[in-house]
Length: 110
Image 1 (cartoon, rainbow, N blue to C red):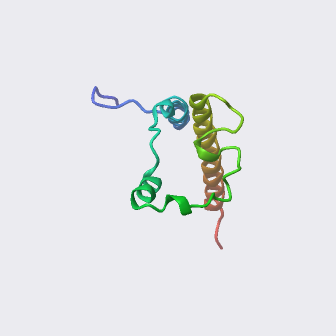
Image 2 (image 1 turned 90 degrees about the vertical axis):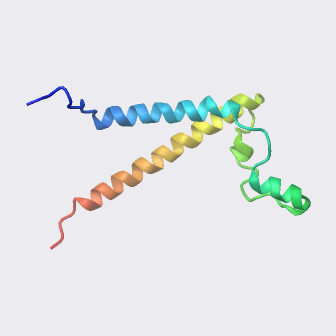
Image 3 (image 1 turned 60 degrees about the vertical axis):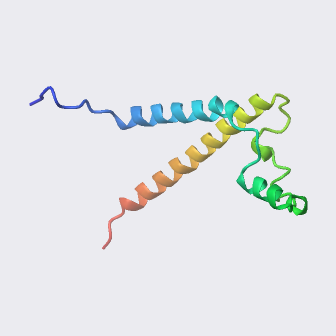
């Protein structure tokens, strides 16, 4: 029996697809408007005067270093692509972990 106060059910697939779309829009478009100021750690280092002693990380030469995609000249496009790539990779890792945990949960223990 259904009443006017019942909320419609949303399928898991629809929820995941809409969630992914929102994440990709945020990563790809909203990142265009991210602050160009240094992050908190760099700001504190500059304020306290020890920013000159910092060394590059081991990932400094990677294709996605410094919140951008190496080889893409437009800074906004580079940042947006890096955000989308990061969101997709994170989503794939999450999906893989969910599948792994789900399979482990279906095992019967004797």
